[in-house]
View (tube, one colour):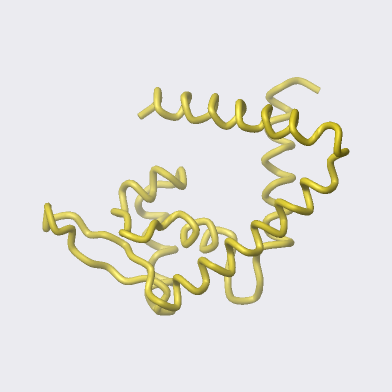
Amino acid sequence: MEFGELLKQFLLDLQRLFRSRMTDGDLTLPQILLISCIPDNGLDMTSLAQRLGVDNSTLTRVVDVILKRGWVFKTKDEQDKRITLLRLSDKGEAIQDIIENKLDRLGMQVHNAIPMEDRDEVKEILSAFHWSLSKMLLKNE
C-alpha cells in the first residue's frame, strides 16, 4: 500500500472508530472535536476553524447548535474587543470531561491491542508522525 493510500485508510479508520466509540445520541463527531479543542481560557472562532481544518461558515453552523444547547457561550477578548471568544459553559466543561474520559479509554484499548514489545516503538513513531504533520501545517499557515 502506498503512503498516501495508507494515510487515507488511517483517517477513515480513525473517523469510524471515533464515531462508534465517542459519539452518542446528543453529540456528533464535529461537535465532539469542537468541544474538545476549546481551552479553559476560550478561543477565537478563526483560530478554532484553523485548528479543526474547516472554514468559518462551517464552524459557525456547528457553533450555533452548541450555543443553543448551552454548551458554549461567546465573550469579547479583553485586549481586543473586536475579537469574539468561544468559551465552554459549565455544562460544556462537563461534556468535555466526558469526552476526555472516553478518549482515554479508547486510547487504552488501542494501546492494549498492540503487542507489549511494540508499544514504545509505536508511540515514538506516532509522535514523530504527529510532529511531521504539525510542521507541514505550520508551513501552510
